[in-house]
Image (cartoon, rainbow, N blue to C red; front, side, top):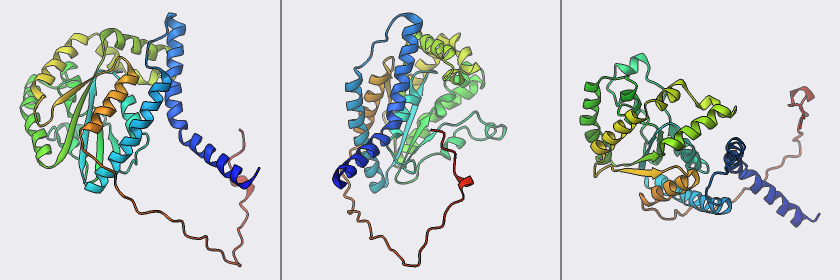
Length: 302
């Protein structure tokens, strides 16, 4: 093999390796579709895979441009992802962050509040995760837990819910006035689709960990969650921070639509970067690379 051919082959392998994670995620979807087909005899309808990949890669390229712009302009961006369990929030977040710098774009997925946090101002633990200049924070569930799961499952009082509804519009206006770009998404699925996805989790050993006792309990309270969601959207849809509903029964279309919409919320342009030139490798005649003891190596099992 010539030097040029070897270089081209090395580049091909490097590019293929860089896309492994994405292919792994999509193959996971394909695996689940196979499980569904075996279980039901029906192949789920969805966007053609080739079209999906092409559009996803195009949008992820734009997300990188947006990231550069956010960093260069010192913007602060907050994106909230809300929706029922199994609505596809996590999948959309993964595709958004997949090609971005985790130092610039990070995910905040807070656990249940501690005993100490329960005694604090309700928004306090979320404020700690807000972005500094040049950062994007994606909230995988957010302060809207109070209007949803906490309310439906009885983890707070109706008085606390009412106080939340009085406070949250002013809280979000305050964030926007401070210069934060705030975007709010609700991922919407049908009753039948959630039941199907829960059944998939029950029968798929690689997904069973996702099905918590809270998720199981939520199935019997579908209508309670619906009423809570409708009031939440009605009372917290404000001009400064409007809600956007993502139709999420088709996961692939939901991801593409969400990313496309997010890109439209922040006008951005190309950021000029100085060219990078690798310095010459410094070599010293007295340098001798020392051998590494064999027992330090991980065994070659593959």
